[in-house]
Amino acid sequence: MRTSSLLLVSALSWSSACSGAATLDPLAPVPTRVDPSEIATPALRVSWEISTTDEDGDREVPTHAAAVGDRIIFVAYAGRLDALDLRGEKLWDAYQGDPLAFAPVAFRGGVALASGAGWLWLNGEGSASAFLELGDAVNDALVVPAGLVVVGSERIHLLTLSDTRSLSLAWTTVLGGGRRVGASTEGDALYVTDENGGVTALEAATGDVSWRSTEIEVAPLRPAVDRAVYVIDRGGRLHALRRRDGHHMWGAKELGMRVEGSPAVHEGLVWVPGLDAAAHAFTTGAGSHQFRIRGNGRVHLDIATWGPWVIVSPQYGPWVIVRGPRTRVGPSDPGAARVLNIGSDGDIALPPAVGAAGVVVIDSAGSVRLLTLEQGVPDADEAAEITGR
Figure 1: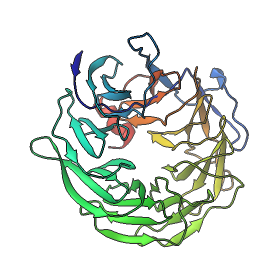
Figure 2: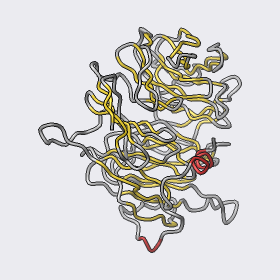
Figure 3: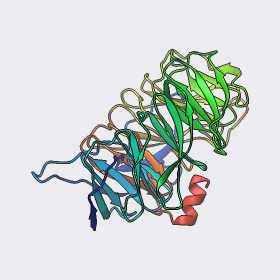
Figure 4: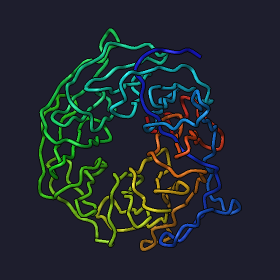
């Protein structure tokens, strides 16, 4: 293990003692535990679990969501960033002076860290590049093929790596009030929600504005993008905007529940976290309601996807992992979602982190877990197949 005296970042992880996936009535409450004998699909498993203590012997708790790269997992604690290999062994750590302004971002084989009003990149060995000053707050960040998109309070930036392996600025677009950013599957278009209820579409290569929609008062959550741009309005209702011009295509039926987390698209369904302690799935084409998967407490964090899995984070209790249906019995039968519950000793305080290596979850007690398929951590070819890269 090696130590670097540099800037650190955040950690995200998952808590879990894996039981199985069962075929369930899609509108029935999901039990806290699923009987392993009812497993219908290969389950995820806990590949490893770690926890750390400080000099006084007290348990350390990560401060941000983790970052999962192809071969390295980055976990941030107060004042320190740990780089772990796929077996959970520490490769190196880096220390920071100022607290991180945003969770670490796995980028180009290393990790990008936001501190104060700028960014720093560390390579896979922990060596740092020059600090890039942006002079703006960090509200969101997202890796796309063109580089690292950073949403600030006043501007949107695209960061890339220069020939000297330092972060450089490809373009900046003035856009006040920006909060969260989503991207098209191809990565060529960006969609930014703002605190004033608007959605702005940008070209990822240039930062040029394609359109801006204010037809719906949109909540400042990350859009999900597939056949359309899927956003949540201030009242917690799902809407679809046409990708090419922002035209309002449909609004999902009011189900008597609110949404306070970003949606995710998975195999023809848009999943949203509801404050009714459930994850809901709607069709991408017309917004018809298909599933209600019960969780524990409010389902209040962003929904993530990894391979065939949809990952939902309740306010407390076990994480819920859903594999959406691939077949239907008839035109009026949506099929049954298969559900896998992951037990936890502590409540979950951070969203899941997903990457080619698997899913990292962190509970409130500070335990960091890597979830992978039954056969273990995938190799590079398997990881590319799982993540579709």
